[in-house]
Image (cartoon, rainbow, N blue to C red; front, side, top):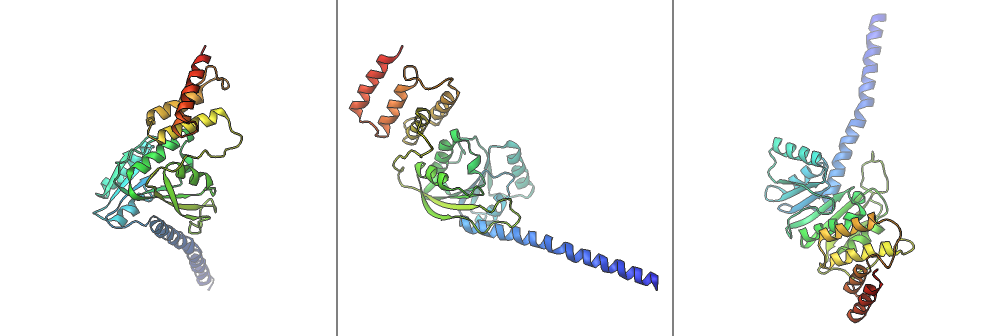
Length: 290
């Protein structure tokens, strides 16, 4: 009898362990499926579309998107991390996925084909883009989108105001903001996720300078250089060099030796000073050169 009771007790304990272990596994799987459905709905991926998963990592959303757009669509998997890109490439080759193109990008240029994309998706990416790379990064996305192309941003930061302002300056209009975003995984490390849906604007927006505390000449010059870039007056490489030159410059701003001519040129380009006044300022600036 004791042996029978012992076996029954062990069997009962095993059953309880199985029952207690099963729900978390099912819950996580259901959670992941719900998150995937939520993201595909958020992006609005349709059969035949061309979509870029920028900052794709190891392809968490790349492959569901590839299934969503189907054999006549295309997904660009983009990341600056070569190892992660290699992982995506190996997986697509192993699974024989034909509609994924892998791109190893650089921080200020996603290196996407011009004017071919229906949508670009950024999932937990935008806050990792360095400030000096942001203008070029967003410009690369805008130039890759079709005229009515959409940019979808999903991020856990919970503070979308700055992102909206930067996207506005980069030539996007806000269509919808979900703040906070409710459809996030229950296991997430953050409950402050938000989502933004934006469209490529027909024209660049009027220039605005973000209110980032007390204005400084240093910061203003960087913003003005970005406006020159957005107007197409300087190249991405020139913008990159400007950031590097200003960030690495020793000491504080000195109007006698610093880049007064560049500042005047930028101010004239975005309409801060008229052409006649700008020429007079250039003459004055040249007189001050040692």
